[in-house]
Structure formats: structure tokens, C-alpha cells
Length: 267
Picture 1: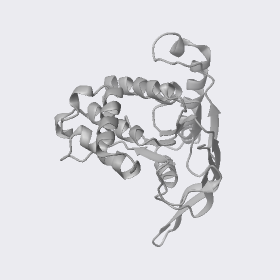
Picture 2: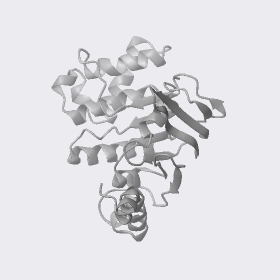
Picture 3: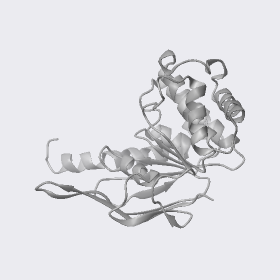
């Protein structure tokens, strides 16, 4: 099981001479086991901070983040993280980077088994011929494939992804979105995925549910009732449900701007 629950999750940081900065304010949400949830919202609303709490790196000021009813207290092997930057060791080959991750978590595997598992996951992300290349010899998209392979190879129950495709060109980004969906769908026991993004179209393509965050307000949960499998082309993006959801999310993103304009404030 890997059900995530946020109960009145609050995070405040002290500011010298300015009181406290409220980053998360009594946030409540439920992410069911095996769900793919995207967290979106404007810059500064606390998306990456929320992921830091779920990683166990940032303790909440009050309230709690729970996994299967137990408070998150530090990092855990049931969680794996993929960051926007590729976070690969530059002196290790693609295969060695994955083996390193495997050896930290799956300590029962022999060296030979860990190497075989690394090759298996490199093949799954389409990098079967690149196992002996260093990160500097790989494109940005290929490096992120290695990072995804490393995260999946340690058998996590929960995959936390912080804008993993944000630093990649548009064409490669689409390819990696479709690869991630394919890997998630192919898993017999689907992982719970929490995926932070600024991209509305990316969220609608990937998510079962969207958590929309705004500074100093409660997060809103939005169900994405779109059939799977999904692809960017064709009926998916042409459908009425997709267009309505996208329009609603765009409105949420820009309603703060509209309020300022309507009140005569120039931004």
C-alpha cells in the first residue's frame, strides 16, 4: 500500500524582522494507492516544498503528511525521487549510476543481479546501447531517462517527480511524457506518482487527479476523468472534457492577474 494523506499540513519559515513566511497553510489532500497525481500552480505556491515534505527532507511546522497512516519522518526506501536536474554522478557510466542506486536500497541483490537489473531498466527507457556512456556523453533527455531508470530500478512504491521534464526541449519532453505513462501503465502494481509541473497540458495528459495550489489558500483537488491510454494527438486533445478541464485550469492560473486588472492595479 502507498496511500498518501495530508492533514492540516502547515509549513512556516521564520524571516528576520518580518515574522513568518507561510508556505503551506493547513493543506488537506488524499492521494490513493496507485494514483498518478499532478501538482500544479503558480510559482511560489509551495509545490516543490510539498514534495520536500513527502521526501522527508522538510519537517512540517504542524499537521502531518502520512503514508499508509504513518507520519513521514525522514527519507525511506519506499520512495524514489526524480528531480528537474539530472543528478547523475558525472564520473559514473549510465549503468554504474543505476547500480549505485540499486545497491543503496536492494542490499540483498548480488553484484551480478544488480548489474542485470540496471541493464533491464536501461532497456526499458530505450537506452540499451548507452550503458557504458558517461552523463557528459548523453543528451539532456537521455540523462533524464537514466535518472528515471534509476528511480524505477529500486522498486519504489511511491515516485516523487519535481518538474522532471522542465529543462528538456519540447519534442523530447513529449517523448518522455509518453515513456513515463507507458512504464507506469505496464507495471502490474502501479506506483503512486506525485508529479510537480507548471504545464497544464502535461498534467492533463498524465494525471488521474490534479492538486491545484495557490499561495495562502487551500489546495483544490480536480479529478481528470479522461480515458486511458492517452496520447497528445487525436481525440484526446479534441474532446470536450479535455477542453473544458484545460479552460478551467487556465482560468485558475490567471484569475489573480484578472483580479489585479479589474481593480485597476498595474502589474
